[in-house]
Length: 300
Image 1 (cartoon, one colour):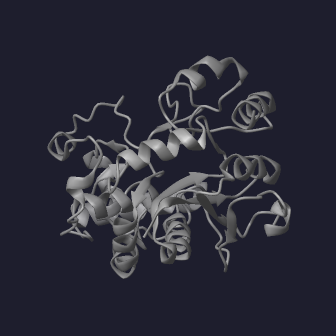
Image 2 (cartoon, helix red, strand yellow):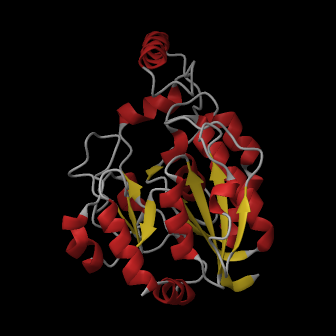
């Protein structure tokens, strides 16, 4: 295993100029970059030509058409892991193309060097209502973001609940933020479970936040979860302030329960004072200044 190297796995779907800035900030001799570009995106790998001098950058093919809440997000994540895992990296970090690091690579690598073979997920309580997404058949798993198909999915699930026709009866589901940092051993374990994941989640909704914690908390690697209590999680008493995946996300000011707050220039002190390594999310159409300021600091 290449203990001093990390793989960054990036799901990109928009804003190629902003994604390019992310890649530049991750460009380091100790990192390799793996990028999946949504097939719907109006740009390709040529948008990032010449942006990295130190890191190898790999683009995952074939590109998948990814939809919000769809099983396609899990499939794209697995495609990234399969592209990177033969390299046997010390850690695999999943980021969105709208994320940015808020700490330098020296600090990030020093932390993970000091915590080898740990798994970093941000666990959340799993409510009975949420479980219905995975206990009842979803007719249009790629249609969660569209009014008509979302309505039909809920209608079908309502009928199935009345009839008590459930799927995945023997699966102990868990819930966490989609974005993770995992070890080489666990990355290969996840890839080995691809057929099981496809069977369990192919007719469910919004599985991107469930497939990884479900695997981890039901695997031999559960004891490697960083500084968290599985028993507390199962009792729905997880501390929301727990660092978990070391990604700063502000849900208190988000425009909806689906979308976190987009950081702005006024958030500079919050971002720089955070002990976390990455933050999401940013949007150059909302506030390009905060992105430029972070780039200047980390490249400075």
